Amino acid sequence: MKDESVELLLYGKEISDLTAEVEYKGVKITKVTPAESKNYLFLELSIAENTQAGEVSIKLNSGRRTVHTFQYQMQNRNQNPASLTGFNSSDVIYLITPDRFSNGNPDNDIVKGMRETSLNRQEDYARHGGDLRGIIDHLDYLDEMGFTAIWSSPVLENNMKQQSYHGYAITDFYKVDPRFGTLDEYKELATKAKARGIKLIFDGVVNHSGSGYWWMEDLPFSDWINYQDSMRVTNHRRTVNEDLYAAQVDRELMTRGWFVPSMPDLNQTNPHMAKYLIQNSIWWIETLGLGGIRQDTYPYSDQSFLRDWTCSIMNEYPNFSIVGEEWSTNPLIVAYWQHGSAIKGRVQGCLNSTMDFPMQSNLVQALNEKESWGNGLVKLYDGLANDFIYANPQDLLVFGDNHDMDRIFTQLNEDVELTKMALTYLLTVRGIPQIYYGTEILMQNSAKRGDHGLIRSDFPGGWPGDDINGFTATGLNDHQKNTQEYLKALLNWRKDKKVIQTGKTLHFAPSDGVYVYFRYNESDIVMVILNKGQASRLNLLRFTEILGDKKNALNPFTGIYTDISGSIQIPAKSTLILEIK
Image (cartoon, one colour):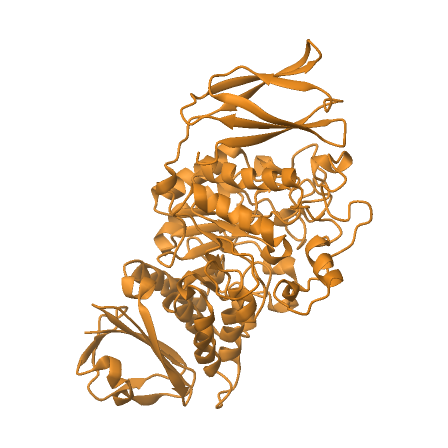
């Protein structure tokens, strides 16, 4: 690898005073660091470029006597780093909460020895049994739908007493939670997805761990985690990263405070912790041949660490992709983190993508608000006008909802046509679209808005005996079937449309409840019409600067050509996509 060093964390009874030696061609111990705890020792190895794979024998000595001997396995690389292509605007990402998607192996539902052993599908915050095998079993469904990437919430060990289903309180960064499956099954998912042209995105968490992490009972250093002796919860004031006037006390509590009382904040200014986290991410990329990382709670981490973490990954994998979660509806705050940003005062990192929370908010407002000069669809128009602040708008991840917010069907008050309008916008606007599992069949949480457990409901058909099956459309109502088929057609159409994936954008200010925008390149023009109002005729002379003297347009979903030399009829509350010929 480009970085020829690796640091090993050794844990064993009273090993900190021992010396270490290795005899293996190409491998040297360059640094030995005892921890404050007598039970840790950190070894830095240098591995020469042409070193052969094999078992490296490492001895720990007390004087001349060898106390411990262990084998460190160096493996041949399975991946060509240049061939690991991350997600980009040609992809559409399907976000899955594994515990709630499909139970492919009931035998791993309850695992003895884990702190939470209950299973109750009737309880929103209990484990329901979904697993990696369930995702593997439905790869054909995702492929046929037209998705090209899977972002799964974390499947690493969450050995917590309760609410362990969501995956974000990790208790071992190197272990797959046995209730989700095995490392071999995780590899199988990556391999079988890749065979279908589907990238696997890893949901990373470097800001915090779960309080049940194995090292919590014996921490190596007094600064291994933040507020180690007196837990303090973060103030969640994420703007302190950009705020010229923020008080130091607020900055410190934001980045050092625990995310919640059960999630200790990892101190990434400790060089051994930083190395541990960076190496772990690279290990998962290499092990699974990942197609990207989505990094949770991005702005909560130390900025210098984020620079080192992102740039270490991008240095090893130049075509990789990382998207950071910055939950702000202010585009200035989101733009701050993207690589290449010209915003002053930032620590320049290598993060190429950020989640477009501002546009998500604009989308919901645009479709829910009554149309006026300053409300309604103009929110989308004004939202795109902010793209000048982003280093690369094409790399923004656009979405209608995710696992932490009300489902888009609920946000749009269960209006089917508005939901289809939202999906159309997400799949035709600039950026990288992400769809939450079940959106295609209008899953909702309207009975209890804001309830995360309900937001992450079971996908129907993912469990034996389910009366309704979203994978086969059995038992779905007409609206669900229609939306699923509509999204499937849209996704598969988008796969081959470079003009949508990487084309330029030209949009016209909304008028009378109609918003029109174009995606275009040197060879193609696509016209998208969003109409929230009544049926009307749209005068096309307004769009002459891009339509020129073109006379015909094709509806790619009906195969019908339309004369565009004058005006066209637009149905009430509808979406229309036209390929200009």
